[in-house]
Image (cartoon, rainbow, N blue to C red; front, side):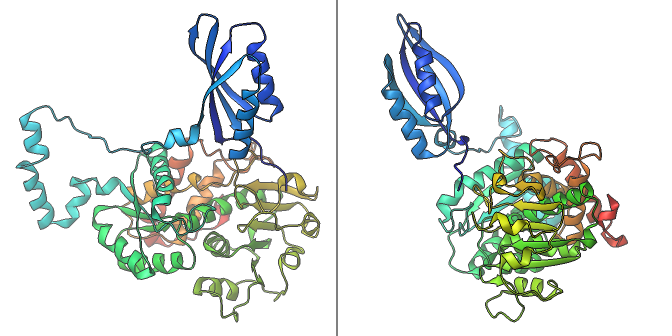
Length: 474
């Protein structure tokens, strides 16, 4: 497996005393470079006569690499390492979000209107007409980011406390990209029913619920029950956010390679939350055929270990009734969508795919196969990483998707909205811009959230018209 490149996720800050003599800083930076560190910034902190105090920000591959760089710096002549800090831990210290007041509180009159006695009039108005909560409270712009901590990133079941930093990060992205006030809610529960009850209990205060980092199959059952029981939209981002981005990327990969989606065969490796949602949305989009593979091989509807969602996929895919594992599933496939685990794809298997093969290797941070290891028969590659082209990242979807749901006062989420969002995302890459290294807009492209919001709002409002949604709309 190839070594990871230095990344901001493992950046350290080295505070050093440097003798103010020729060559001192050069020796320091050279030592860091020889150790494989990527120097991001050098800042002067203090000048004390013949001694300079500088902060060097250095990107590292992992924690062990950062420790090795610090050891090497300590051995450099004329340098005293005063302090080493982890920039990611520094950023998270004290939490990443806060609640701020929208109104001034400068007088007794302000207090009387915002709180007692004036607020009682607002409560009575809402008690008489509960729907007025959408106009008179934060409900219309608020989303609960709800988790049980059972499937956090690639870490697994780390519990609700350890899930909190991830939920805070999600809330930051909601606010930054869509202006939505999102609240991390990390629940300690022991069953599907308990998590469902938590969601039901908090739902009156929110305009939508974003389920996050909940393990399969619990995530399927919880979402399905809540969709039936609540009058606000419920969206499991690990499933549907991933599916929307993958579908958008596939629309554009098909455009670039002169294919039609309905004539393509896709192999989906990994049939957990994300893989199942990708498979279902691609089937909704009209993919020609789909072969889903789990750890036991190509899935079969007769397998008693499949959950209901996986059995539904098995019943509607693999029209040639293939048997075997990933290698057999890839023969003749146009696209591979990997949402499983690192290093499980052999390069030789990709040579059996169709001409101009498309590979989305999305295990993160280490994909199913590194891009450098792919054979030249693969034309288009996407990963979940920011250091390669074509990053498939859910932040492209969920802020704008919820903005559209809230703006349209949607009560649920359906495949029409997801397909419309995928087409809107794909459409942001103009025909003349489309290349093998650019099939999706950047996660920092500020056009993305408004485009998806508008598409979702339109889908909600046009639902009664039952207009067909197809990739041909591109």
